[in-house]
Amino acid sequence: MTIDRGPHGVPARRRAGFLLLETMVGVAVFAIGVLALARCVDQCLNAGIAEAADERARLALGNRMAEIEGGAVPVENDSQDKLKGMFAGITLRQSREPVLRKADGKTEPITGLFAVRLQALWSAPEGAQSKELTFYVFKPKMH
Image (cartoon, rainbow, N blue to C red; front, side, top):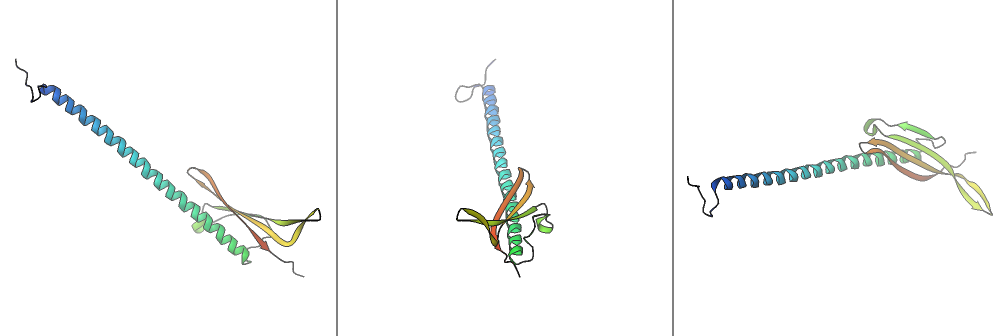
């Protein structure tokens, strides 16, 4: 019985086994690379979704601020609204407090000046999210 040897003196069966091993290692490395790439794509998609939700919240806060400044929404009461339409899923909280000044050792409110706090709340796959905006509104008392 003679053993078939290749050009380098290695038996053919051994060469075939080594080729199979090389192929398996190559496929494993390729599969790991594909899984890593898929994870990166998933992270990019999640970041895009989170950015879009954040932008919607900023837009909702800006809209409510404009409504308050324009007088369409009163600032007299604290409120909480579940928004609809393109802002569905966002809850908007509104609160106000008088702006205080310190003079002569006393702390007293400035008549007609309020700090308005708006807070947008929504849920996302990574948990509860929120965005906040605070601004000042002057509402003089009418006689």
